[in-house]
Length: 448
Image (cartoon, rainbow, N blue to C red; front, top):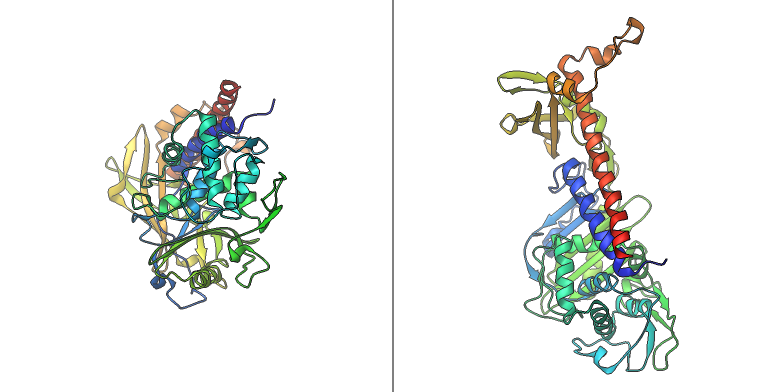
């Protein structure tokens, strides 16, 4: 049986929440990532932005930010991104809807595709009109149809509920078109959550990446095809940038807000900024500069080096010196500009002795990972006592000399407990992953 869009929306919300819990358990600090090496452009691009946030979509690392937690007025296309995300919780993309006069009110904005009462369109057509052509009348129609399907009187309230589900704690929506409203506010941090949720929806992500769209429905007074309203995504325009796979723009009285996804074979970035200029061409030029500076960044795997450094760390736990620590996170990366060559001898791991905590025979603490004088980030280390390891592991049969452990493991002393630590983390990950699967199946049954 074909599942409704609303059902899948609920399932994905639950799965994303569970995945976020797992990521919180096993990930390192989410602080801004310091990039090793020398930037290809010495220009300080941050000076041209009031607010800035650039994040790597593959790792979740924040590459640079400025005032990312500061509340600011929200206008423009990313409001309609939330309309799309909320609407597909209640409507199928292939579903046909017939518009009534009430579906086109209340209209706020100045851009229309020409919707009229009596027209029949697919939900996909309305989404494309709203996201590709930036038509605000399509946003109003979509919002009204989704609210009717949901049995709700206020679609904007549904948008704010969706924002809360995504963790957008500093965002308030006031309309569905992206029109200026002083009470409609957000932060760059929240906009990043919105962008990632949109990317995770394959249908919406595909529509958002289109340079043109052919309408599925045949309606008089409506174009049969539309081109992307944003010239940066239209190959026929001088502003076109082939790296941009999604974009949104909002123009205020003094600023221009740009949200974009820049992607090539190596990098996948979300670039969000509020430029202190109302010039669209200047904002697009600034976006191109950001792409030039950050799209060549490479993510270097330093997991092995960090594990070796952690094994040599010692710290006092309950009055005893404990060594042989292991990183909780299995995959640890460092960002570097193009041309940078890693000298592993410059990697340092400095433990924070005051952060040591112990519970049930397992000690944890944070350590600062640096390269020369550049801080890469924080790593959480753990050490498991022999008693705790024995309690969590089944008794092993006696080993003959030929079956004994390799010297590299037996010579670590207390460091041999690190293996049990990895087992515990793996088991924890498996338990959470299993819970996610069970939760998904349960929700599917309930929605049926």
